[in-house]
Image (cartoon, rainbow, N blue to C red; front, top):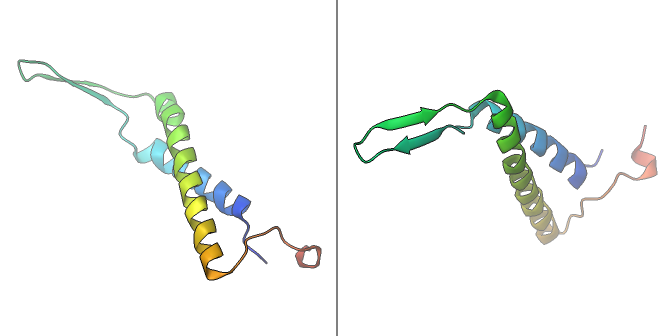
Length: 86
């Protein structure tokens, strides 16, 4: 079984999106001149919407780095051959 760039991208995208949505701090902090801090809490929908583009960027960079690293090692990531299919 070969690992494809599409599979790596998909798994990384889903995992990163879940991590950004669950653990990301998308709250808004405003500091006024009298040193009072106002915290506006992000809703779950805000976390999912902001986590998507961040996860997409992370998955793209991660897959590109993997692809470059495999090219430097002389291994090509490709789609599985017909003989590898079940």
